[in-house]
Image (cartoon, rainbow, N blue to C red):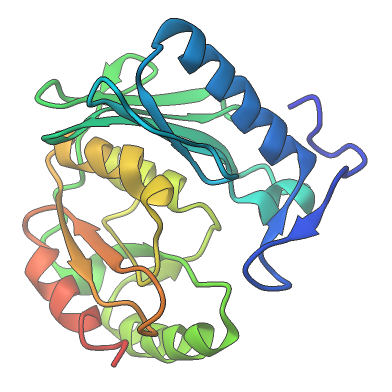
Length: 240
C-alpha cells in the first residue's frame, strides 16, 4: 500500500509486453520468503517472481506476491497478495489479502473458508442464465483472440460477465457468493492455489480445462455444485 499510486519503480515485462512486473512485486515476494525461511526452515517455496526453494519437509509455500500487477500500476484498487501451502495431499492452507478493502480470505483443508473470520459459502444460484460469471485473459495475443471468441459465446447465456483482473480475487468472490462462477483458460499454480482451496472449502466445485494454446498452462472452471456441469460444458470446448 505504501507503493500503490506512487511513482512506479523497476517496471519491466515478462512473458509478453503486456505482462508487467515491478519492484513492488519483487519486494513483496522477498518479504514473504524471508518470513517463511525464518519461521519454517526446511519448507519449499515457489514464487511467481522467481523463488524456487527445494522442500526438505514435504511442505511447499506457493506465493503470488502481487496478483493483478497491471491494476496496481494503473491505480486500480483491485489486487491482492496470495499465499498457499501444499503438502503431498494438495493445498493445505490458503490466504488471499486485499488491502484496499481490508479483506482477508482464509481457508484450511477440511476447515471451511472465511472472510475476516466469518465463514463464507458459494452462492445457491442454479440457473446458468441468471449466473454472474467472472473470467480473465492470458497475456499472449493469440490466446486472447481465442478467449475473446469464447466470451462472445458465454455472454448471451449468462446474466453477465465480469473481468476484474485478479484470478485470486475472482476465486475469493466466488467463495463468498459475489459471483456465481469463474473460468479462465491459462492459470499458473500461484494464480489459483489459495483461491482454489477457498472455493472448495466454501462448498464449490472446481475442474481443469484445456488452455487456449498448447504451450500455455491449463485453466480452471469453478462454480457451485448446481452450475458446474452447465458452465463447464459451455466453456470446455471453447478453446479448441
